[in-house]
Image (cartoon, rainbow, N blue to C red; front, side, top):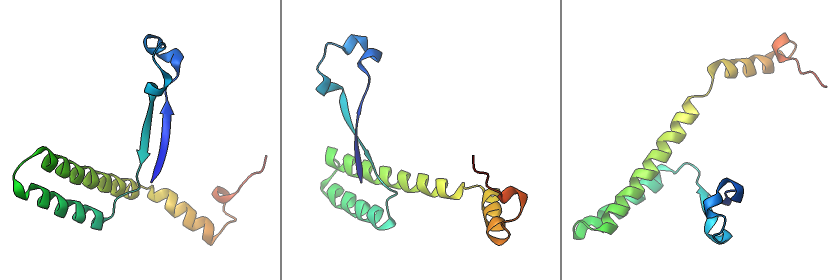
Amino acid sequence: MQSITVRAPVAARPATALRSQARTARRVVAFSAPKQEAIEAAIKEAEETCAGGPSGECAAAWDTVEELSAAASHAKDAQASSDPLEAKRVADCETDPSQPECRVYDD
């Protein structure tokens, strides 16, 4: 898990220029694609949380499951959307690097 702090430029926000800089920072956390085990664990936790009846904690637990499932789906889509022509070109260049499309020119 990576953590990045992002600050918006003050000039872009003239109305908030007088506010403290500490309030303009926000933390952005980037996660890798969740594994199926993590999703299953979140589902089990959500079911246990909701066993006592619906509550705010129950809704938050199912929101976590939804976010993990969506992240896994997006990662799967990104992996599946790779260019098959590029993959073929790379394979062809590994087989025969003398082909014109495999040439690399140094500046």
